[in-house]
Image (cartoon, rainbow, N blue to C red; front, top):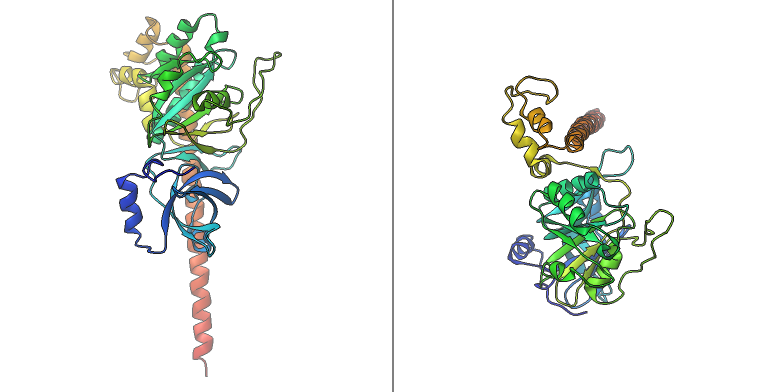
Length: 362
């Protein structure tokens, strides 16, 4: 599919960053799919496979620096122009980061250079406002604008009640109830997919993300499976993140369902998602109020008169503890890495001195 780089979202800021690299033998491209060490890139006139250069891999200090879907990269076409070498990743305008699954303290970037995040929950057993709060923090922290998308509205008996619940934690994020089967509500999402704009679809497994992408595309571009009647859940179908060019000119990144969403950072996101709690906290009598049994606690007052839901306060505290624990682990991880770096430098310096001593000996 031939498009211009402008249609791929390559704006003046990205062009300036590309030109600043001063690499005459390179051209810009966008990452549309990533599979292990191999990337599918779009150069505007075609798609081409690529891999990072050896120099890039050697200089990268963390996995988060490697290309992800949505990145703009500087590439050099190989002889014959059937493959490309990725020389650099251009600075990201936005990025979605989470802690990698498991015990390892490492950042995983899910997608980059996104304008809008469709946070998908289906109006069945998947609907969970506590999980939605996590996705909202992820979105606000990324730099993209969140839109809450409630799918399968045709299967819900009380859509308005669910919209009200989502709105109560959305803190201003638009809420759209849609049905991929009937087409109801899709026009509201299409407004975010204009030429050069990129959206990402995020949500848990079986929330109907791929079905939603197919409906917005107007055809079958992603494989889907039926919902299991036993637990009202769909089967995980998307296996890799992929940027899809939409007929109307925008782009959408479909992502595999996340069974676990551990936040990587969240100070800005927490302030946005829990703006109500933080506003009450500023009115507490004591600056270091723990919002428990302290006198003059405005948060407890909001809880007592029903302005604040008890489960929402519990979620706020849980996420605060999680982020504080991650920050301590990350800080310790950085200290260990720095110690190892200095140890290697010291050993290398000692080896050079010993070698020089041998060379200077008669």
